[in-house]
Image 1 (tube, rainbow, N blue to C red):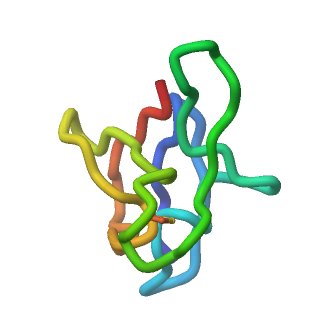
Image 2: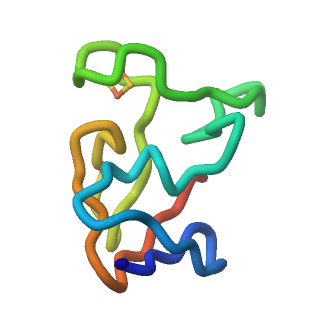
Length: 75
Ligand code: FES
């Protein structure tokens, strides 16, 4: 099972799982300009509510497969 790092904390995810499964329950992917939490809605890359930064690049968590050692930032 791959281990990814979410905001500096280790999270173990199932092999082949999307990054959304590493964001916790309820899943908080990012925050809007007011600081309110935003989370995955559609799960198919259409709503952009699951934006995270993976190894410094903006990514949709619902489309990205979790790989060992990924550094995920939700800010
Ligand atoms: S959950 Fe909608 S784009 Fe990822």
